[in-house]
Length: 365
Image (cartoon, rainbow, N blue to C red; front, side, top):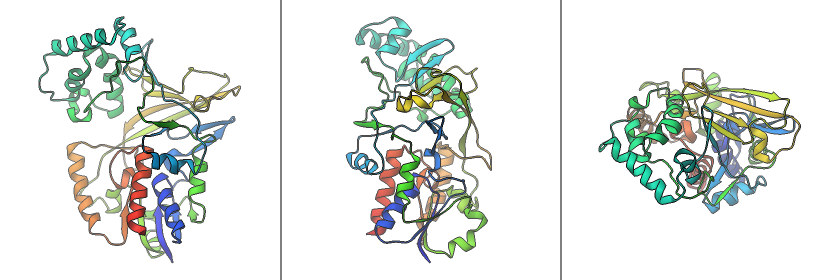
């Protein structure tokens, strides 16, 4: 008999398992995939740590979280500075003075502010009713048309005029010549990849891979006093209120016989005609000097049953549906829900660690 059955060997499940094991609890961790690590799983190809499920750049301003993750790996000084490619034009991200200088030839922050203010005024938008109007009312037409519109429509699979305005509450605009995407105090990539972190977290646990909870539900439920479930909460409840919506991704990864394909770890393709949203060149996360390189193209897609759910669709309809499932889960005494899918919320890695630590403190006290 286990104290905890942990469904999902991703970051949330692994942090909880680590804390529970430290508290002398016996844990069984299962995952339907053939590897641990969930979406932060990395594997070595040609001496390069490949982020199998998209780029994962660790960043936080929370010293407790930063100190915690440092226990499991040494991090380098990688700074996220993506490039946006609109057709054959290249722009710095996030929107900053380098971006504005390339767009309009402005040199000073005041010139950039004036240009954006002029475009916002010209739009005449007072009360944005959709994402397009919201974006234009924040950054003006030029930035929206070249750097927001196409990327967003690919990401969500809908026209910006059909997306609710609240999806973009703000757009990061900086009036400095600074290409650092994150404002966080701590940032980096674990030297040697993320999988080692999960391996260390799961030490002392029993781990079963290629194990789908729903294929062995009865047996698994009886094997533990309590369950931490990090899968889709609506699936756990057999979609009794209906299906929550997600966005999924398709990845095309290839090894190229060149030492440097695009000169940057992340290049976003912001025109609608290019079918992928970005290309990741993995070696640049760790300043690689290998003779070959590995790139991954990311294709967003509408989620269908059987696909991997990457992003919750947190619009009003889905959030109100999730609320019903949350009310069900709150009545449970022997099951906990965690992670993006269990909590139906987008989390970065540092948020996941914070949430998992909070849950484990409350649960194991």
